Image (cartoon, rainbow, N blue to C red; front, side, top):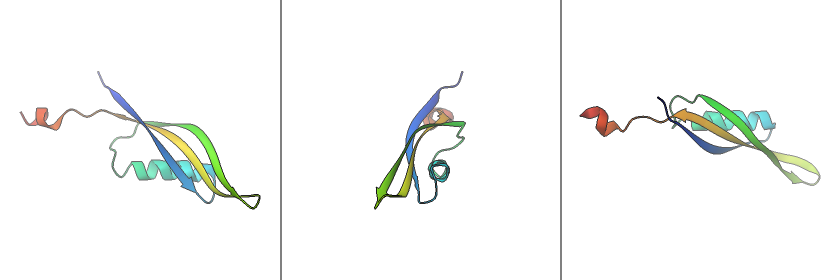
Length: 74
């Protein structure tokens, strides 16, 4: 049986919401092993002078919970 942990990560981009989502996953994968999937939860943006200047995507990232490393050493 596998337990899965889900965290929320906010990605940002000056290009698009898709690029913001990819950035969130890319950054999360630097410290999280074995990401299994993502759920795009929300899209927002910063607007200045009537133009979108920054796209923001909230991403839920799912990955398996690893066993306690102390238990593995025993």
